[in-house]
Image (cartoon, rainbow, N blue to C red; front, side, top):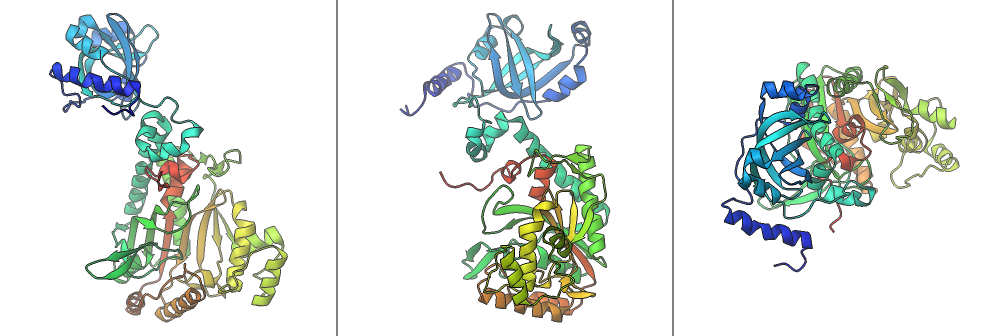
Length: 499
């Protein structure tokens, strides 16, 4: 026997032989579950003991024992299934001595099956009166007592299975996340979009600015990247005539981890032929409001990044503002009206303590750095931020009225970016030049710059219709809508340091 086992673990292991002696598999067989805890409680709450007795409702439930109050010849315990907990009343006279003795061997954490009738206790609690008790699985370790406390926050993410058992909120989020995604799919499908799949392994780093994970393909003897975006393949499908496509997919970025970033995360990217920035705004605002109503039935949500701050209100139209307008509001510097040289922009940055990367920054990069330093955190209510500099948007159409800027927006909620959308660049000559600029940035030290995708440029030469495109961060949207506070709460198995 393992010397590292606790006393309780030893006791539990000691019971295994007793089960075998009784002819019972300690790790069980299939059980026919016909009912769920919440469904039983909802359906029969408010009925009297006599009414339930007359109805003679038979149910079959299974779950994990979470509480036991053993008494002489009758006892109470509760089991937890996926939907919640329900109380069980077990009496020796009803189940017989053999099954009652079997129940008395049970520990908290064991998984059992119950056949019985619905009753109500004197305190008015809907309860299952056990007529047949079935042992299903022996738990060899006791459940932790205070698992959802702050001191165990790292362990919650490492051992998500325990978090799901002990923490109702964790289970709620795990169930709501796929509901959010289904609502999103349904919204897009109803508007004629086709859900597609594109490669995770890519030989070109492109579609976004981020540091990739690199892996080696043995058969081809070549390095591949885990994709940092789905964009360039989806646009090829627009060239191919699919017209409206989207992909909900996992992306990988070899970057830091914090409350809103995990190196492996999920986005949806969507492209609409004959669309533009306005059609993307309509889709973005529409899908978020639709999910809020369909899954949560409300418009007002907690700001996940400042729970003490103002509530986020989705009922009003989302605000539209340009990057230069936000910078001017916060600092008085007007990059739109003044066509500053790079040297003048550097002076302004120095004066306002905005960090400049000397090797590859241009005036456009400085405008973006100003926004990140002064503007980003001020966009609390849902805001479409438009008018990004051309240099930081290599895949976007230029603004015909001012080619220093592009037709792009980012959606900000609670001071954080939730979505990124473009009127897509479909000029193959302009696209090739933008890729060449990105290669120059890469040479100067920007390891997040795009690489040249020759095949994509060739695809554009066959003609891509005018097109709107958007990417929405699903993890961040789930944080917001479930009123969680960290990306680790909404990803079932987030990346963690090895213990």
